[in-house]
Length: 484
Ligand code: ME8
Image (cartoon, rainbow, N blue to C red; front, side, top):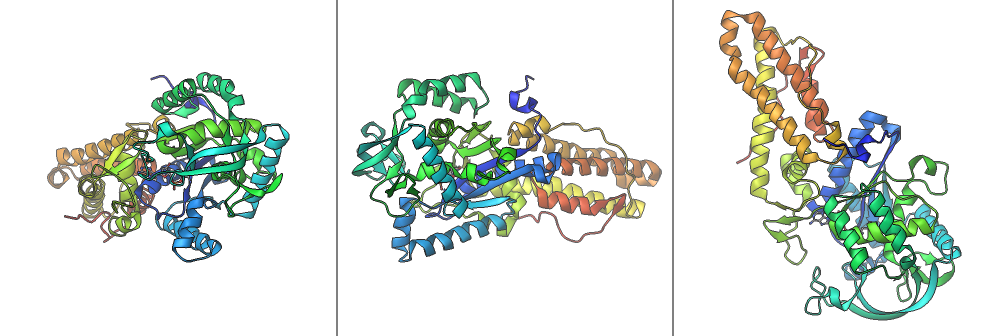
């Protein structure tokens, strides 16, 4: 198999980000998806490169019109509203076991300083000019829209008519970067992944072309003031994208260690901002581009788009209260190829949980430990195991689905080996062989849990605590209780 450049790169550090989320919504499984994927990679790279060489950032995008509208609706001051909701998001991610190194808020002081500094640089570079924006603005997307983006006069995603606005704004010369961007994407095949998204961006550049966009709002009070015109605030996307630079320590000695980011994980809904606006902004500010933007697909729920109005959003917290964090991580990363769209169904979640986690991993752990307790005084021989599958190439190229399906078929084969060898019969005639067979399976199981750690951190640790240094620790806790 041909290796991608990304896999061939020898990394000394790994900086991964998720989108920063709008706080007018509560986190649902879509937000959990991007964040769990980034968390999995952060855990993998911490083990490989050392904890000090990994930076994993997630957070909240607060300086938007959505926040203003939501605060008004909640009858709270905008400051109180953003403080409370950002704290709620952070708490939810903590409960999901997300090991972010920084939870960034766009209201953080260092971020405000970054945005103002970069705006000034871009302005000094001659890439910002004053103009009049007259047109449509969709608050749902926090984006300017064109008539031909609409369906029956409505934003196709938010089913609302965009606002018509006319403002004197500051514009960014995006058009200036069109050719450079196109060539960059052509010359760097890994920059945008998966391939289908890369093609989508290239075709956007070729067919629609890049137009300058407004980077400020005149009529909005809440936001970061422009350093060269304090009557206006920065457009929320110009501000939000820069969180990646702030969190890397922009303006401090740490910045050179972390920037450029190795990977931005985003959903396919926001590729235009990350693959078109963002590179041009960075070039204008004299900064390097991230090594990769990976846009994953979208979940539907029982075939329907996740939407507030349908009220079908699944709360990840409720799910993990019943099934545990590892179950959610497993389902999200195993069920759907990272990069493709997929469907989420509670029935399927329960089925996958029972068959793979309870019956396969859970059952193997419990029957193996019980037999070793019974047939060998709670001991096993520590033997060297040859991996049946090496997962590094797959995990570093975000093939989470492949990693999990390979590791779980390996587990399957260990269950199969128990069935074949029938230790309960073998013990009567050949106790020594019984111990040899069971020990080999235990050591393979341990190696698999090492590989599973970034995906299933809690249960891997539990298995490793049961089988430790040749001794079995009896544990009455069932790893994955079955549910009907
Ligand atoms: O766009 N399936 O924030 P946002 C999969 N603040 N992933 C989903 C999803 C679904 N159904 N729904 C949401 C913003 N997501 C901006 C980002 S970044 C500088 C600023 C995930 O709260 C997915 O990652 O609307 C998507 O890109 C993101 O949530 C959008 O979150």
